[in-house]
Length: 211
Image 1 (cartoon, helix red, strand yellow):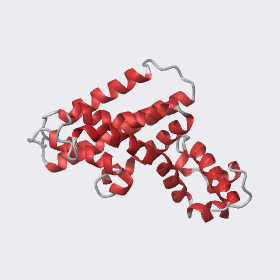
Image 2 (cartoon, rainbow, N blue to C red):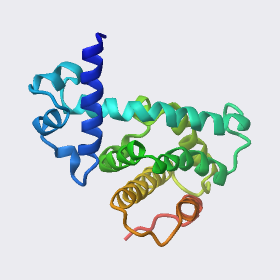
Image 3 (cartoon, rainbow, N blue to C red):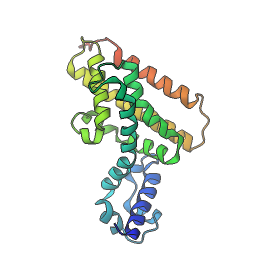
């Protein structure tokens, strides 16, 4: 890619990440992103990304690879099928690589963006290329450690809500940090509490109740 084209692409990603991270940011007009990137023509974004959706995917990919690498390293001691991992260790391997992004502006923007994609979370098993190989491994292993009294559908639902809980909580924390709002919990305590809540929800043996 020519140097000028690479610079334009990077500028669009930087501007897009900042603007899309705002509450409701996924509805940001393409022209606003292009203007913020210092470009004159909306066609620049379409040329590099095919549209706003492609830009969002490029932003997610820029951080998703790092998260997956970190998660793979955390899971490595537990074997290929994660047979040696406990539920707390699996939950930690899912949460920690994302929580580490709270320490940098670009990471906080990423967390805020993915928290706006909650409507897609129930497809975590249908789109493994977007979910991530190692995240999917964690989810499958967590299902195996849930109470056997739970149906497959209920186990799937719990993973979806776990994903929603973690992603929404980290997104809210990221926006709070960006706004310099005082937090009652330190980041370490926030993450530990998020993990504890997740473990409690995933391990509950309460069965679904009919009307």
